[in-house]
Each structure stands twice: as C-alpha cells, then as structure tokens.
Length: 580
Image (cartoon, rainbow, N blue to C red; front, top):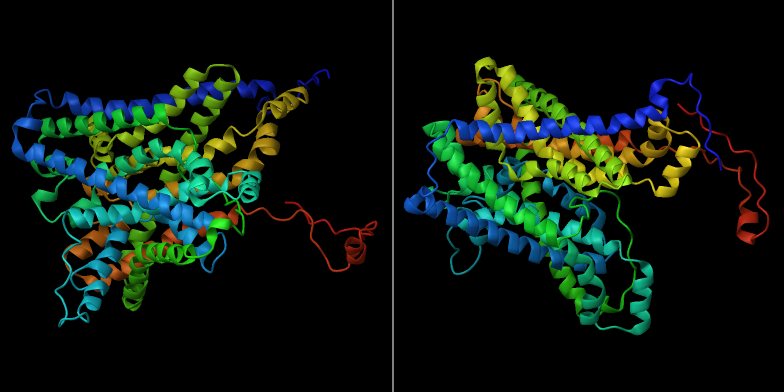
C-alpha cells in the first residue's frame, strides 16, 4: 500500500511534523526534572562545604539513628511483602465473596491515604484510649493495661504495614490475575497439588515483581516522616528523615542536613540499581481494572476455606477499623465543621495546591513517556531508559531535600506565603511523578507496530493520532494518574511542615495543629473532611472519564427470540445517541 499523500493545507499540528516535537518536549521535561532534583541537592551541598562523612560512625547518636532507620525499614518491608504475598494468593483463590470489590478499592487507596489521616485512625483504634484498649479492659483477669505498642518501633512498623501491605498485595494480585486462563485449565486437568500450583504458576507471576516492589516499599519506609514524627516516641526512635527536618528547621545545620541527605540518596539509589537489574518493568501501581480469575479451583476447598477466611478477616481488621474510627469520630464534629470558616479555607487551599501538583505530575509523565516511546521506536533503547529513569530518580530524593535546595536556590526572591506554596506544589508534583508514570506507561506506549505503520500510511499524525488512537486508551489511566497526583499532594505534610505558613494552613497542617493542641473533636472533623476529599477526587475523576455507550439499547430494538433461537437477528434501527 502506498502512503496517503498529506494535504499541505492541513494545520501543522495534524501533519507528520508534529511528531517531531515529541522528543524536544521530552528533553525539556528531562532538563526540568534534572535541574530541580540535582540543582536542589547541589545547592544544599554548596551551602555545606564542611560536610564530614565520618560523623556517621564517630558520633554515637548519628550511628544509632542510621541503624534504627535501616531496622524499621527492613522490618516493615519484610512484613509488608510477606503479608502481601499471602493476601494476594488468597484473594486470587477467592475471586467471589461478599465485599471483595470494596476491599480491593480500599487496598488501591492505601498508597494515597494521607499519613496524618491514617495516623489519626490508628491512634483512635490502637492508642492508649482507643478501641483496642477498651476491648482489653474486658479481658480476664480484671482487664489489662492500655496498649503501649503503638509508640516506638512496633508502632512505626504497624503504620508502615498498614500502608504498604495492601499496596504490595494489590500489585501482586494484579499480576496473578493476568495469568492466562489456559494455564488454570491445564492445572485443573493435571490435578496439581497446592505446592505445585505455587511453584509452577503463582510464584513465577510474583517473583519478577519482588525486587522493584521491595525497593519501593523500603524507600517509602526509609524516608517516612509523619509516621516517625508522630509515633517515634523519642530520640531513640528517630530516623534520618526526622533528623534531616530537625537539622534544617531548628538547628540550621546545613552540613549535617547535606550529610543525611546524601546518606539517604546513596542507600536508596544503590537499592534501586539492584532492583532495576533484577526485576521486571511491570507497573507497581494498579493501572486498570481487574481480570476475573477462575471461579472454582481445586485448592479452594476443604480446610483452606477456613484459613482463607482468617487471612481476609485479618486484612479487614488491619484496614477498616482505622477508617471507621475516622468516620465515627468525625461525625460528632460535623456541627462544628459547618460553622468553621477556617477549615473550609484550608480545604480550598489544599484542593488548589493538589490540582496544580496533579496537573504538573501528569504533564511531565506524558512528556517523558512519549519521548521514551519515540526513542524506542527508533531503536534507541538506552536513551529511552535514561529518560524514563529521570522521572523515577525523584523517588529516592527526600522531599525535604528538594524543597530545601529549591528554597536556597530561589532564596533572594522568596518572601511571601504564595511563593512558598508554589514551591510546595512543584515539589509535590515531582514526588507524584513516578507513580503517574507507572499508571500511564502502558497507555502511552500501547500502540503496536502494526497500528503505527497503518497510521503512518493513512497520514494520521499529530492531533489526529492523539484523538483517535491514543486518547481512547489514555483517558482512564490519565484520570487515575491525576487522582494519584492530587491525593498524594492532599496528604503532604513533610514539605508543608517546612515551608507552610501556620496562619494559612492546608488540611494536613491544620490537623497536625489540632492534634498538637489536644483539640480532639476538631481534629476528628478535619480528618473526616480530608478522607471525604480523597474519596471524592477518585470518584469525580472516574465519573468524568467513564466511557458512555455509543448506542442506546431500547426495548423492542432487538428481536430477542431470534437471538435465543440462533437464527437471523431481526433488528430495528437503533437510535444513535447524539455525540458531543
């Protein structure tokens, strides 16, 4: 087939020349990300010329902080991945049970639930006066003392498992559900035992994910800030991130801050380098709907019904009580919430900043992925990997380092709260960039070689290719990426704690202030409002991008008797819905 000759009267954005703008735009995005990330780190290092690496092992308190940081991150990662494997296998074995869809939705949101929000729920359930303490009072003999496990190492690990076990399990479940149905039919025909099913089918689906998933969970726990700030319980349970915050906020010790930042960066970069070498490139976030697995399996009967029920109930007991505690406690503060103008201003401020951060993350992700896809099509895989890697690099840079470095670079021109909040929006957009790229990767690079060749032959370029070929597959992942970016920004506390203004707080800062001043009822109402906003962001974006039917079925339009009898279908003309 000869290529279709393009009309030279078409606008430039419809011609083939528009495709050539992809690579320059991607390079601009790479330069922006590199300038912000490396520039902020370089600014911090330039301000700290006397950085002494030997302080890490010569000063006992610094070495203790490093050991504790590694210990809590390692324990959290092991428990999250181990529990995630168990939960994923059970949920894959039980594709149908009451409440499964709701449980999956809650698991998907574990990544974006604000840290302070989850901490509020965990304190309400596991705190000294929480639900768990009330239950322990009824246990013999004569009741027990209030639980103290929520503070210190055990509390930090519990909070990290609350966040990361559902994330790990959901990603693994997505991999298990993508196993071909022919494999399950073959398993049933061969009558394989439970151990053989694990070795031949389930483990090969999960194993490629583990290196990168372990690196992600370890990084999130290693750089945790709000959880350790709230549940640390003292200097003995401090981490590098908290020490970095104290060095910048209170001591203004730039040399120490630079040392801690470089230590975090080198450890996380080394771990990610090993993970990228050993793992696959499957997405580490849920990028689409689930694929229904087999309804009936040989290994789903007998005593495993009871064991699977125990695992599911354990997961429900981990996730739902803190969220229910937020709702129950927040409902009592709704009357005060309606008349409090300050909390509504904080909510509007948070939504405005979250929208900016979400848009920034999505735009950068689209540019980087489009440039990477363009390079791979032309056989430049190494350069394409470098472009994608630039977006993932932000994940190992602490948000405090990004914000502080930018503040130092722009310090002569910064002075107002508005400029500080713009800085927070930029940092939050960059921190959400890796997750947006994970969601959008398959949709941006989804065109097959045959589709691209046919589009070139038909002269479908630029805007037309985006509208008719890419956009139908991109719409839903784009909404999900935007939701991830917005909700991650909604729950930000580490950057806003450093650069936010107490007189003009966001919802997480307001919640922290209320908890610090023991205004429990007001904090409960604020936590409930923050939870509602997170849920609404996902619901609204999902509704806006839901695909409407092109044709509306009307009673009598199809002869159902012909369909059921297997004969010719007699159809009346279907009424075509007006297209927008």
